[in-house]
Length: 93
Image (tube, rainbow, N blue to C red; front, side):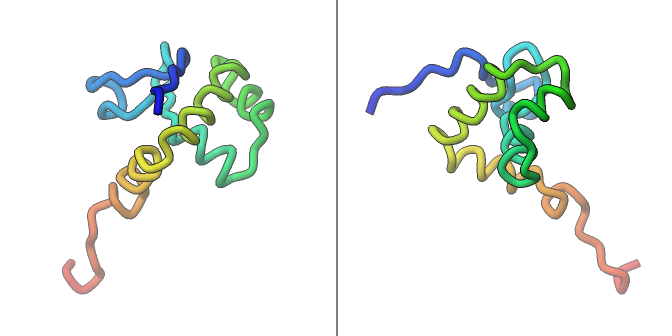
């Protein structure tokens, strides 16, 4: 299988922990997936909400997700509230 190029997506270990981001921003692909596939926003609504993004960037981020679902799903899990927030129980305080 030939690797597909995504011109609007990059990885930088110094930005967002190396997660795939939209080139020239700090906006992770996982956020595009969350807003569109989990919250139900359209790409046009996302561009309106984040005016520094373009439709081409949003669509390339979605294409990147579909080409790399396991990677992005792992990124979503690793950055979920449950994974990021310290696990404390009321009894341990």
